[in-house]
Amino acid sequence: MQNIADNLGKIHLQIRAAEANAHRAAGSVTLLAVSKTQPASALREAYAAGQTAFGENYLQEALEKIESLSDLKILWHFIGPLQSNKTRKVAENFAWVHSVDRLKLAERLSEQRPGHLPPLQICLQVNISQEQSKSGCAPESVIELARAIQPLPNITLRGLMAIPQATNNPQEQQQAFHALAELLKSLQNEFPEMDTLSMGMSGDMEMAIAEGATIVRIGTAIFGARQPR
Ligand SMILES: *Cc1c(COP(=O)(O)O)cnc(C)c1O
Figure (cartoon, rainbow, N blue to C red):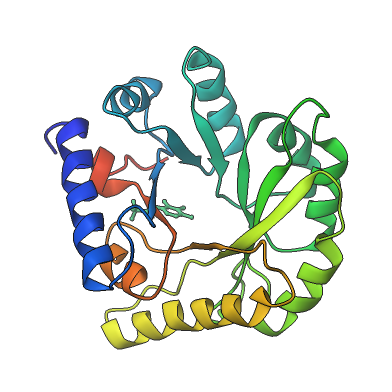
């Protein structure tokens, strides 16, 4: 990989093209830079190139970067699996959480969100490919979860997130994105504030945008291959 600024420039062009192909407004898709395992210096480089939203998966690693990059105006998104005994630091340090898949997490995040911060923006993670042993709420349980979470005071329910099962079959991939988009549509009458579809990664961003993604979560295509943790 050459440099992060070049990669970001290319991805922005690809996003614009995918928006146009899908007859969607330019700027309707937000790029979230997934920076797990990357050093703070790489995030600083991306920030200098105009990237302000970063997604992190591992809390301890994220907190170290948040501390060392506190001079920058970064919008931090938590996108990894979340244990309920780790919610406080997430509530205190992040703007968004994409991986809420049960009520208890949302209750704790709401309770622990500091009063001087705006409400925490939440996506419900859906196990859209119905995989065994995968995090995410079952698609048929999402509406119940949304109803329980919506009244909580210090969080705003913004939408749905999924990591579809890896597949080499583009049609299967598309069906998974489509199913998540349909699920969001089915919720929007009752929950008009749910406007976010967090789906699509480096390998399938275009297809996710064609199916309605509003946030794409891109790591490898920006920062290069990750070192094993
Ligand atoms: C790592 C990760 C990504 C980014 O994946 P890439 O293939 O590197 O773009 C997106 N979403 C989640 C939840 C991730 O854990």
